[in-house]
Image (cartoon, rainbow, N blue to C red; front, side, top):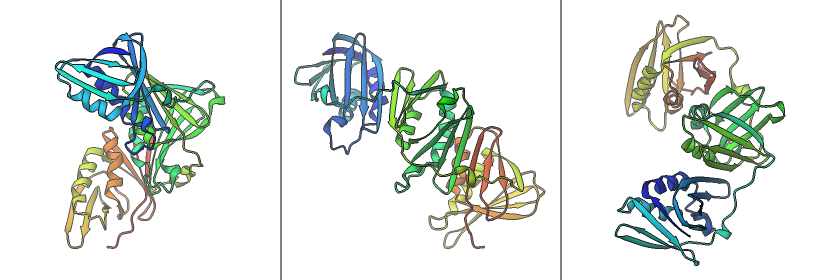
Length: 365
């Protein structure tokens, strides 16, 4: 096997697939990238047996073939090469010779036969949607995925294909983010699945704001075809909790507030919050919100935001990180705070199909 390729093209293609590779693998082959040279392109594939990703890149292929090489080391070498082009040849023992300008490297690979193949999706349910819509939906929800591995069904995004809509939900039990979008598919394709966090991260790396993504679904696997790249992942098995029952039905107050101003104010005031008492208090008065933090042994901070509000005076406290997370990932000018009282969950909404439920914190005055 022998090919010549532009250094930058090769590096970009390798970086697109290298994140799946685990450093702590017990199977040496899983640390490698499968490289298949055919026609005028290379196909690169990596997997950790749960998530797999493959992509293609144009190359001048002199001799077709396949091998696997250590992914992270190969990326490190290609990144540092001095010339614009790279020539790589692999012998029958899977030794790769890498030449670029005055540089020469030889690295030892493993045969491609040992590399686990990515699953096939022949009888899968298939959906098609704009990449930018999926990317935006993931951005608005993925930060709320739980990292607590004891509640493994929450370690991913619940994805529901029902009633002509795709619904994405993420929660860690203390907050919940949800987005719905219209999507055309036959009623026979209705399904509910949980896509693991690692696949969600890779998906966000691969998606762009142009073109469509093809989603393929079986009982235990999901695949995403994006601009010539393929991402496959096992699904999380288990029953996702009934998230709709934590969304308050009738809130008593709705306050419209500038997203940027709210985010910056909470960020500044939260500088006084400590790890122990990590909360900021929102006090609602006539046409204003006072954002406050008070920590013993540190000090206090207050900042006022002007809003249109004529309801009863009351105060509610939230974890500032949880409060800022949706504000950072939305792009609307304004958000709506839907509130009931000091002890009930608050809801952040926008003019669109997004909502974010956040549990209040009990705070002593």
